[in-house]
Image (cartoon, rainbow, N blue to C red; front, side):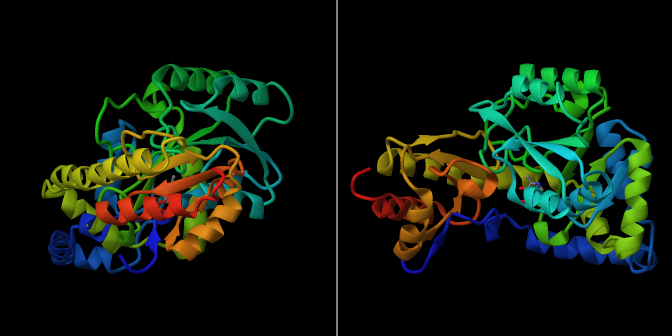
Length: 356
Ligand SMILES: Cc1ncc(COP(=O)(O)O)c(C=O)c1O
């Protein structure tokens, strides 16, 4: 297999993208509602999609805020709340929010996690001293980068602690629906009776290029972020949102999700098998869904391995980029084919220093 194999990219494999269906949906959306979606509109997004999200989460539409991808919404929220304040995150966590928070001058407090995700005792102790944090950024399901899922008892504890300390929790959940097996635990948003904040996205379930994310927020905060959105882009991309809405209305979402689950589940299996064969001593997470798997290579300098792996034709992301230890790495199984995953893991194993 020639060329570099990317186990770094958290992108969907090209065959996950429902290109022909979206082409039809975009055309139908323009025909049906063209003068609305080709003009400026509300900063909170396309009304019908906002109502869909409100109904899904059992909240008033005034609490729903649609953005050009959920990361854009995170930027707005962080700009509003984080400068000069403590923000709690998991260790490890998604690297882009870490960069955004540090550019905004937030004090990032990384909380310990284990194989089940965030340790609620670490949260309790962080809340027990110092200035009250601006918010907790939490990825409870198929976490990026670890692939871990927070069990229900821990979710309940987090929700209780948040209520006790009046802590705003942002539950970022782009991967929850991409579940290959097992039962989904209730979201923090559900467990809290809708008081915690929630964000998700159609990036992993339909297409990231459409750039459609959504937030469920306390109403006052939703209004504040809408003002920030108005001052940034006036109106989000209504064509993308209306295309998603058409896709949902046609009943295409669930069948597409089933298809995506099948494609990505096969890739997860290929990666687990390949790791079992090529790196039997590595400690790895075993995600029931999502895009990523976390690897701990006891005693290996992953910075050094990174350079050796690149030379051997495979890339990954160093765990340290997410705040993880120097012997950790994130492997994405979402993008390349099962065969490429097998070959990529074999190249990674061959790149390890001989002593390991
Ligand atoms: C945990 C997490 N949150 C948010 C995002 C951003 O998603 P979007 O495409 O909706 O901006 C990603 C993208 O990879 C992600 O992994």
